[in-house]
Amino acid sequence: MIFRDLYHPEASFLILPSPALKGIQDYAALQLRISLALIQNYQLLKDLTDTLF
Image (cartoon, rainbow, N blue to C red):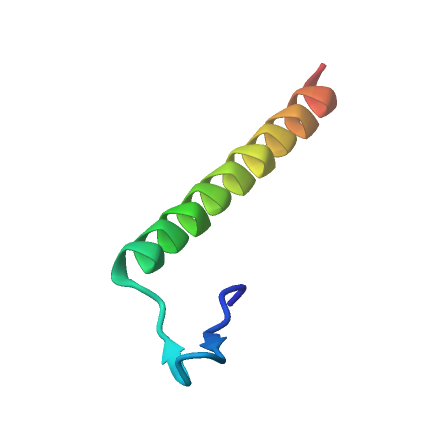
């Protein structure tokens, strides 16, 4: 995962990732997977049409 826990030196405690931030991160990962799948589908379709015509 890209996210790292942040250490706050003045307060001497760990700031844990919030649930909202986790939700945003999961949503961004899902969007990326969808985008990659669309690109792969487009490439497959393009290869197929190049072969047929």
